[in-house]
Amino acid sequence: MAGTTERTALEERQELQSERLRDTVAHAYENVRFYRDRLDETGVSPEDIQSVDDLERLPFTTKEDFRDEYPDGLFAVDADELLRIHASSGTTGKPKIVGYTERDLELWDEVMARSMEAAGIEPGDTVQNAYGYGLFTGGLGFHGGAEELGTTVIPTGSGNTQRQVELARDLESDVLACTPSYALYFAETAHEMGVDPRELPVSTVLYGAEPCTEPMRAELEDRLGAAGIENYGLSELIGPGVAVECREAQDGMHIWEEHFYPEVIDPQTDETLPEGEEGELVLTSLSKEALPVLRYRTGDLTSLTYGECACGRTTARMDSVTGRADDLLIVRGVNLYPSQIEDVVLEFDAVAPHYRIDLSREDELDRLALTVELAEGFDGDRERLREAVLERLENALSVRPDSLDVVEYGTLERTEVGKVKRVYDHR
Ligand code: DLL
Image (cartoon, rainbow, N blue to C red; front, side, top):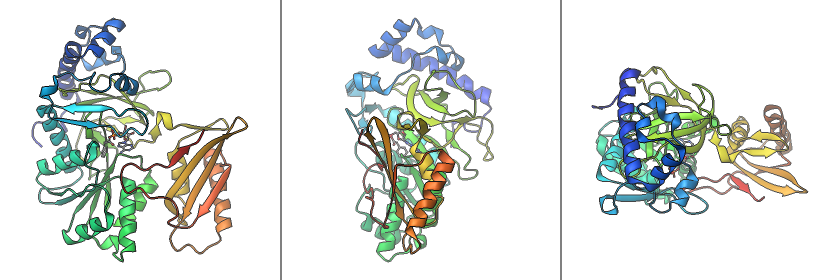
């Protein structure tokens, strides 16, 4: 796509980033009281930020800041300049409200079209968009990008899954855009309808919006007979369209970093971490009008890689998100993320890609109860499987769940709309 720095030398991109950073900081300072106060308190003036190397001098922006400034305290333009409002899918408390000017919407379409192009989607392809339409950025984000790229988009939104299977078959959808959990549900529904999901024309699944381990990706690819390409983004920055894997290498997600500048920090010490080290992703918007964000702490844990990718793109790449800083489970002193449990459990062919973690507290101690589901048609020894999973968890993670239930295929609730919930904290 023209006018991007996807394949330019690092120095050239950095110059552009620095120029845009200066503009963004000035824009935020002049038009958002929150940023003006924060910078003044910190003793940093916009002139102090001349290049991306000065970024570390800026204070962070957090989810709490969005909540405190609800609904529109972080907006940098007047309400009549907004063309659209979305909100994040926060499960608790107030949603984070985000707004877009005309230029922001154009930018969003551009980064989404670019993401889809990098994912190997071509003009003329048919994209069935099963991300939710509405306040969630998934639906309209993919929709805009698909049209910008010149594909045919079928705006099914989420839910109504039998109908979706029929449409995918009858309209010959090449691409299914949805969360990874929905892709699995879609495959299951097809199977129940007597349709072999692998026989459907879908050859690419543009998944995202939820964590997805490699074994989970392998499951969804296998069940749908399609390539899974991972997408990452968040409402606070724009929505989907922040980063995507390239079809050629699938070696980390390319961050469209002339618009979203990435850093990874140690969430405890707030120090910036070097390439390859895992920590919390921090993003700064470089081209946003309505909602510029400076050093936004995403809460998402990942690491960054620099250097040219086998596909020829030179952008920074981020690894799959292993979890959220606030998803950390501490079970009898052992630090653990749900994705680590997923990784181990899905090693077992006899286990379906559905599980549930329940946390409770008894006598001041945390209890972890794990429920896994049997693969369809399993007729082996259930108790032996249970023991094997327990032993493997203990070896791999140094923690043994207090209880492990192995339930029949189809027992655990499926997510047809919205993001999957696998951890239930009753503490
Ligand atoms: O989930 C935007 C999106 C839509 C991304 C469709 C990709 C596809 P929010 O609802 O604001 O926006 O939620 C953002 O979702 O901070 C992550 O915690 C999580 N998330 C998004 N993509 C991924 C991913 C959209 N690939 C929050 N892997 C983010 C893991 C993801 N988590």
